[in-house]
Length: 637
Image (cartoon, rainbow, N blue to C red; front, side):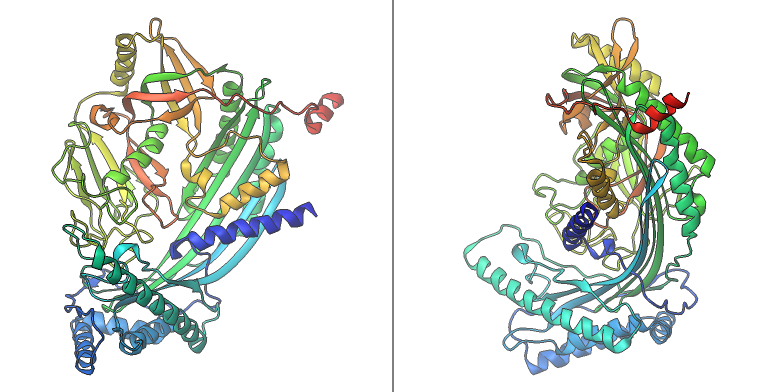
């Protein structure tokens, strides 16, 4: 009965997540993979014809003009690109159904007294998804699922005023498609979703027009911008994982915790996926590509005698399973995790603190992955504040710091950078950006939705919002990590503090919020149900390893229970960045709505004004009885 309840609650949580996820996070995969033509080596772009700019009911002459302009856009494709498009439409039944139904909708989907859509797009994502979870040497959960999801979107009006104006919806037709590669059934589903999407767009357009009759918006930017059509055809993703092998590997890793009595709760989870993504839009863009992902996550908790729970984890995130560490290396990492928790759980309880903090390596990556992206994306469309104070040419970080990004780069100093993209969610080719140079904001990540700062897309739409690719943070200050540590102690003395702090590990935010692999949130929920609530202490950005330094003696000691209360943005203007310990970390950005993690390169950073708060006053006392496994082992001895 409890298991049925857990599964029902899990499915309910998953439904809630799925309703709010972009199509990039949908669990889908075709029942029959389409045949794969030779990929186009480089996406070919062509100029786009001018869109119709209409806000009044469309006339017969307007319709003829629109059909003519649509033909011009298609004719604008080069012979090579047009030939590639026609060939893939012959071979890929799903793309052909998408192309044909979108073409019909763009020329015929019209309510009386309202215009045809001036832009439309179909996204279809096929995914096969496997989940494996084990605890204490026993398999806890195993499932393989596949599905096909769609995102049907139309814009009605024109680029100056359409259904997205005033906060109206653009992605109105998100849903599922039949899993079988059946042309008629796929078109039927797209037809129904297109009808719903168009009607909602018309409603939103009417509301936007009414709003502007009594609301004045100064310097209002357009709501959409032109982009060159792209034809890029790459193979889809194959699901060729040896699941029995990985079930054994996950169980073996989870059994390591049987050697550590201090660990109260533990689990090892693995997610393997293969996605094939397709996009067609009314500009003439046609895109297909595949992406694979493998994530192994180890979670462990220990509890002090005073009831405080400490948590830490380890994870391995790659696109290709061959890039995972060997089983021996992963086992070594699990044992290191257990040893780390043993030290932390026995350490002194943290007290309140406000002052300078050195965020070391992985902790710096986790901290900056949350602080920097909102500063370097076009505002007004991503939910990260107004663009009124976003000025290109304005200083936003310390003058010694520069930040660049590149979604296309795959390796940094021999280390693999996870994820990235060549073509973004709107079918625009990505390009590298020099975001911040010597503290000055030079450019921002943009989509096809203009702001007062950006007028066109530079290929950075991630699930419907602007977001950077791989971030590279560097400094020309010449300061080493040792210099930063010495500066930390010096600042503490200047502020009259007895101690200062170094944060060495932060539990990755995406692992506690479900970022890269949303199903890990469900696995975590199941573990909590199985273990009776989880004991608390596990939240986004949990500080896993914090060291206190005596400013007089320089002596270091671990502390437990520290929590970040505030990290004011002004810290970025005075931050010190090392130039000798940069490394690659897998993180998630708050700006990225594609539900994927990404590689980021950053060194350690020193911030002058950070406030920590003490642990919660109320904690649950440890279990009265010991773990029966360890009690039996003692009796055997």
